[in-house]
Amino acid sequence: MTTLARTATPFEAALDQGALSALLIGMARRVALWERRARTRRALSHLDAAALRDLGLDAAAAQAEAARPFWKG
Image 1: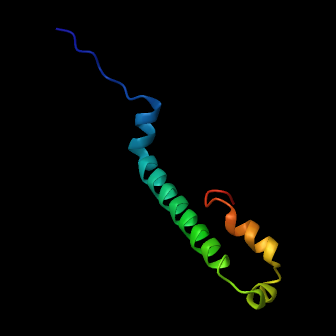
Image 2 (image 1 turned 180 degrees about the vertical axis):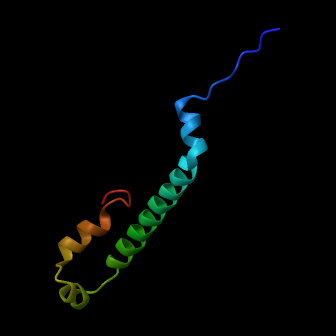
């Protein structure tokens, strides 16, 4: 009786070497970055003119930054 040995694909081999952990960690970091961007842009949209001046921004620049999607850096 002949048995066929199953060899791992390159993707499966990489997963066996901890790549899945690295992938999940990278995804978690990306989601955390997106959440931080969304939170800070939302906060920026609520600042008054004096606070914007303290940051060196004018209202138009603050509005433009606040309107950007969270996934754009």
